[in-house]
Amino acid sequence: FQLPTAESSNKILKNPYFKGGSLSRSLPSTLIISVQEREPVAYLIDQKIYMIDEYGKILQSKPGMTVSHLPLVTGLPVRILLKNRKPLFAALNLIDLMQEVDSDLFQFISEIHIDTKLPPCLYLIRGGARVEVGNAQLHQRIFIFRNFIKNPAVFTQLENIKKIDLSFK
Image 1 (tube, helix red, strand yellow):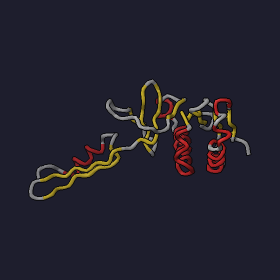
Image 2 (image 1 turned 90 degrees about the vertical axis):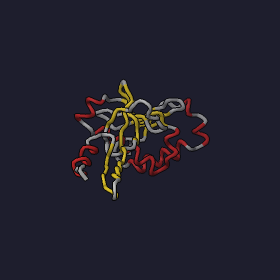
Image 3 (image 1 turned 135 degrees about the vertical axis):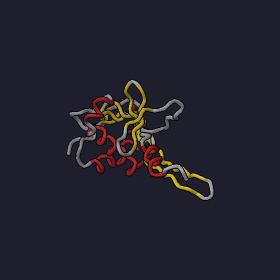
Image 4 (image 1 turned 180 degrees about the vertical axis):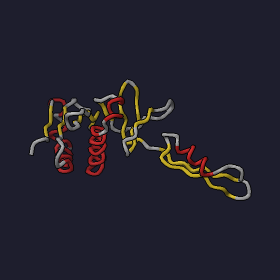
């Protein structure tokens, strides 16, 4: 009973890897600590590997953290993204849309490349083609991309494709 739970909860929440947490007591002598860890939705590559959560929080991956099969974001260093998160939020929006349309799309994507002046673009694993999706009607464009990439005639020719441009109306 000597431990101030509100103050201790605030200390727990200062850990950037936690997005939520609480402390409670269970009588007679138990203190229950619950935390919600930030889950990465993508990894940012900038000399080191950083995890990015759904809110755009950039955290350095800790030793021993498993890097799962999530999209890689490349193109801008962390120092620039901490000043201007718009490109990062555009990439996160693209990730959300791809998961909504077909989460299997990530098996075709090697990276999402971001820039301060251009909309994010994708690079394919097989063949390395650049996929420009633009910045309007993204849901529709991702759907078109899905149908295109999953077409067996296209899939067998991915090594020969250099660019897929969906950025036009």
